[in-house]
Image (cartoon, rainbow, N blue to C red; front, side, top):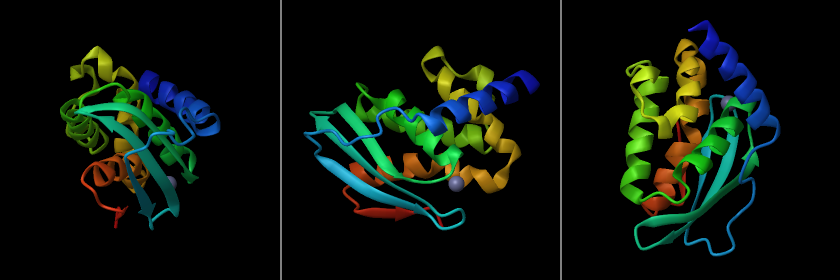
Length: 149
Ligand code: ZN
C-alpha cells in the first residue's frame, strides 16, 4: 500500500495544481454544480453528450487538492466513453474510495482511478474525492445541483 500512497500523493499534487480539462466544453449539453459542505469544495461540471457518448467534459471551481485532482481524473476517465461506461467507472470508483474494492482488481482503463484508493484511509476526504463524480451524475440526470451532504 505504501507505493500506492506515494503515487497517490504525487498524483494529487500534480492534478491538484494542474488540473486537466479545467475549462468548459463549447458545445455543452449538460451541466450541474456540486458542493461539498464538509470541506467547502465547489465545482461546476459541463458535459457535451452526443447520442450516448460523452464527447467532451470539463470543470471549473474551487476546492481542495483532492477534489480538484479527482475532478481532473474524472474528466480524463469518462471523455469519449459511453454513458453506461461512465456509470460503471463511478460505481467502481465509489467502492474503491470506500475501501470496498481492491485497486488491483481494476482493469487497466481504471488504473489512474485506482490511485484514489488511498483516500479510503481518510474517511473525511471521501466526499472530496467523489464530489466531481456526483456532480457528473447529477448533470447527466438533469439535476442542476448536488450536495455531498
Ligand atoms: Zn475537499
